[in-house]
Image (cartoon, rainbow, N blue to C red; front, top):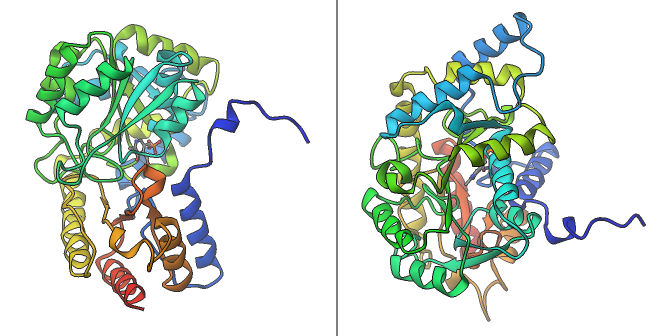
Length: 393
Ligand SMILES: Cc1ncc(COP(=O)(O)O)c(C=O)c1O
C-alpha cells in the first residue's frame, strides 16, 4: 500500500457531493429520486453567459491569463461591489476556480499549524476540512435556532477570548441554515472584533444575491469599514448565475493577502479557465431584474417547502432569509424508539422514500436534514409528501 500524507488523512470527501452522487446513480438506474441534496440552482446558466463562452472560444481566448484573473474581470468585480456600498480596487480582487479555491488559498496563506479559527455551526462542510489541510484548528461554536443560527456577540467574545483565535469564518446567507446577518447584527460583530485586533475574518457571501429581505445581503466591510484591513470576502458565480460547473469564484481583501493568494495560485492551478472569465465579465452586466426573477422563484419555493415541513408533526423548521436551503430539525424522530441518528434517517429516506437529503451531522448539527429547494414546486411538494409518509410508517 502506498503511504498517503498525514495531511490528507485529516479530511473526508465532501458529504454533500457524496449524497448527490448516490442520488444521481439511483436515477441512472431508473429510480425516481427526488434530490434535495444538491447545492446548486436548477436553472441553466443565463443566455448571456452561454453566448459569451461561445464567443470567447471563437475569438481564440484559450490561452493562459494572468494567474489572478483578467484585468477586466477584476475591474468588473470591483465595480459590482459598489452595489453593496463598498469601494474596492481591482488589486484587492483575485479570481479563482470557484469560491472553494478562494477559501482554500486564503486558509493556506493566513493560518499556520495550530492556529485556532472559530466557525459557528451549523457550517458548510468545507470550512473545517480546509482548515485541517492548513494544519489549523477549527473551533466549532454552536448557534441556536432561536438565534436564527447566528453568533451571539457575547458568545463570540467569550469564544475569541478563551481560544485566542486568529480567525473567524462567517457565512451569510448561510449554507446550511439560510440564516443571514442583518446590518445591525454585523455591526455588533464589528464591535466585538474591535477588542480583538489580530483576528482576521473570512466572510463568505457566495449566496448574497439569493436573499429575501432585500436585494443583496449586507456586506460586512460595507457595514464595518474599519474592518477592511482584516476581512477577506468570498463570492462567486456558481449560485447567483447558475455557473456551478464552470467553476468561477473570487476573493476580495487587503492587497497583501490577495497578492499572497495569487502567489499560491500561480504555483498551483494558475488562472481560472480563460473563457469562463470572459463569460463572467458578461454575467456581471446582467440586469438586476433578471437576477431578481430567479430570486423570486426561490422565494416561492422557500415558502412552499417551509410551509409543508411545518405541517409534519414533530418537525421544526426556521424560515431561512437567504440561500436555497431549509434546515428542519427532525430530532423528535431520533432516539430510543426512532432512528439512531440523522445519518440513519437520511439513509432510510433515500432507500425507502427515494428522497435525497443531506444529514445535519455533516454540518455539525446532528438531528437536522438539509433540504435544498432548488427544485420545481411539483418536486418539492411530492418530496415532502414522501418524507411525511415515510415518517408516518
Ligand atoms: C457556503 C459556500 N461557500 C462557498 C461555496 C463554493 O462554491 P463554488 O466553489 O462553486 O464557487 C459553496 C458551494 O456550495 C458554499 O455553499
